[in-house]
Image: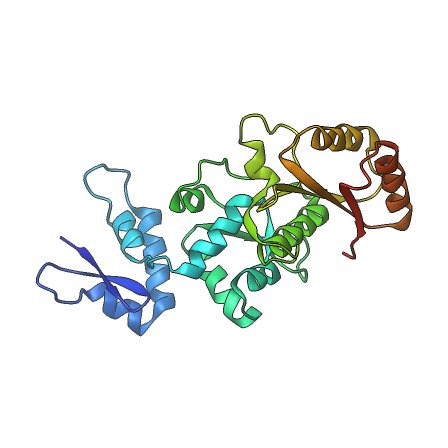
Length: 263
């Protein structure tokens, strides 16, 4: 019966006597051929509960998750979609280092890769297997292609908060997807940053703002002592003027900052 032995940053199946199996030799000699043969086994294996060689070989071919893998899966579980550049910032590395990590997670079925246009930058989302790998109870995200630009922009704000760009010690950073799963956080910020002083709410406003909704949200922050600050990022000057007028009208100018953002 095969068992797993960690070798470097991966695994390979060996039998109980410690002799390397023929599958290791095929995979080492020609990884592409091994992967194709594995796919044929999965395709033609009968759905019998007693004999599933294809499924066994697929499992034995996986790698042990490294620290970078888990960091990427944590990002993927927090957001519905992200791109490779954001992974580079998260890991503090260049694109040449980030892309092999993503490729490995896609090959294992923990991430999905897609493109809007053939020549466009690919984006990624987590799968149910990826969520299970990091113990996340969140549902598989649904990618809103209409709001894709705004979704990716908010991930940048989340990353900036994580690397300490707020200028103060950060205890934790939560995405709106994570907040929506918490009781009592039905209408929360895009990013919630817990600091030593208290909570900082981060919002991104694109296009024509829903001022009625923003009014209700800001008023809830003003009445909740856990919130010590709110940062509203706006893309256009006209939106910034409208939001500043709203903030001043609510008497929250000392609590709410309005900042321009370039996407």
